[in-house]
Image 1 (cartoon, rainbow, N blue to C red):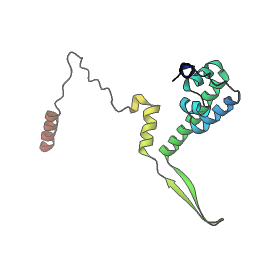
Image 2 (cartoon, helix red, strand yellow):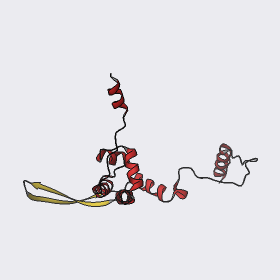
Image 3 (cartoon, rainbow, N blue to C red):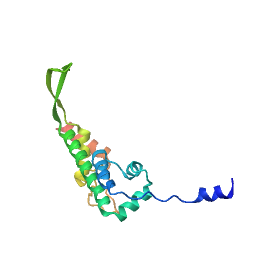
Length: 160
């Protein structure tokens, strides 16, 4: 490789210039597709670092992305809530272009969606691990032998 080609290969590219039309495009991509920075950079044929620079230099661009993501996240939240509660929908059957049947169907509530919703909305009450303090101090923990407790309980039931 010649010196000229090596020098040209090391010459950094000029970043793509910002276009004000990107503000609306970024909002649409974020609100309808949930686009993350990597997706937006690809949309504008730019690197993620260039996208970050545009967000720092153009507050309207940054705000459009943030607002678009809020819209998308709200839609996801509503969909999760709908799934957690269950919902009805109408199924239509066509023969050609003629509507021949309408049926209302019900989707039952989804317990996984319920759990997910509650864990995120009320983490103190719905986390997987509950902190239980039985009054013991870390230096003197309360130790419960559940086998003995169960044996005593069984003896009481036998007597009764």
